[in-house]
Amino acid sequence: MKLLYLTEASLNRSRLGLTKLVRIMKLSIVFLFAACLTASAKVNSQRISISLQNAPLQKVFKEIQTQSGYQFLYTNRALSKAKKVSISIRDASLEEALALCFKDQQLTYTIIEKTVVIKVKKDPEPKPAVVLQSVITIPPIDITGRVVDESNKPVAGASVTVKNTNIGTTTNENGFFSLNVPDGNAVLEISFVGYTTRTITVGTTRNFDVVLSLENKKLEDFVVIGYQTVRKRDLTGATGVVNMTNANRVSAQSVGEAIQGLVPGVTVRNTGRPGSESSIEVRGVSNFSLSRPLFVIDGMLSDANVTINPDDIASIQVLKDASAAAIYGSRAGNGVVIITTKKGKEGPAKINFSARYGVQQIPKKWDVMDAPQFLSTIKQQYQNSGATLPTGIASQVTNNTINTNWQDEVYQTGQIQDYNIGISGGSQTANFLLSAGYYKNKGV
Image (cartoon, rainbow, N blue to C red; front, side, top):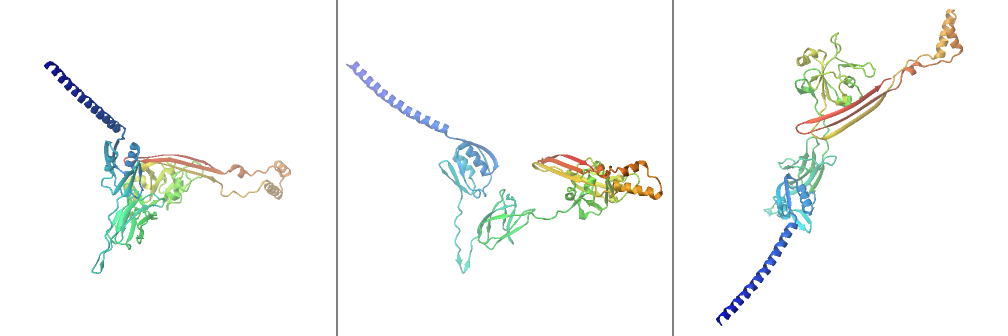
């Protein structure tokens, strides 16, 4: 009996252990299923990885939208005051990314379904005017605006100040500004280098759209004299500066033709034959052997008649007096023509193209007799002298069929074609300019 009792007790304990084991297995299955769901959700949720330095919010939003599928809804005015952000995250959630974007920003956001709505944080309500001993304190006025040029492009860095005060600010890269002015009687002065200053009274307006126009001021002329560049009014020597605007109006095959009649004291002689070189004389002929001036192109001695395209020239200065010899020696005895060519500027590549077409004609032809008039004159000449008219001339008088105008046969209408194309650009460390020209002159 004792052995049977032990067997039943063991069996009961075995059943109890089996029940616990089944419960543990059920709980394990539940936990395992939950863990799988969590892992699946984590795998399926979109993670964001961004690495940007000093970037505008618009660019960061675009990256988040590409990776998460969330759309961003905002106005340009809302982001006009936003600071640039530097963000570097890897496998972050949307909330983590947005928290970094809106840190220290005067902006707030709300997520509605798959859209992130961005708004400007509301400033605290201004305190009402306080009346104390008959003194009224008027709160300042917040104004905003945008400054653009005549082509509606934003003017970044424009100065916006309140006249006769130290209150002022500058526009951001999009031309927007915000300012706190004392009252509606404040006068704003908006200025930028190269543009005409605008003056505006605030009044009841709180948002301003300001258009700046280019300032039409004639720039001061500078002269290159070999070892330095000085203002023309400070130069004591005799010099001449060519107005390149007038020079470019002429279709010329050489520098001499381009500056003809544009510099006092400089004589340009041209034979008129197509392709012929022009002769330049500065203050007349100084010797019998050689009267041509010295040409200096970008600091190098050269011949400027047919070896350089006039369309590639940026400026021309003519040194006329003996002081030029102090720079270039005896070779400058006939004067110096200093030429500076065009160069590329920093920025994207630009393409320039110009085309000219013209005609040339003899201004006046000789007024001569035609064949009948000439034969009549010859016949009268022989009769007056009592001589017999030659047989050849007599036959022409009888059979007057030849009447050729040799001026019309020799001269023709000349044609001038001048085409130029160039591409220029550069960076902060280098620049380039490539150009090509085609010139053809079919003379009279």
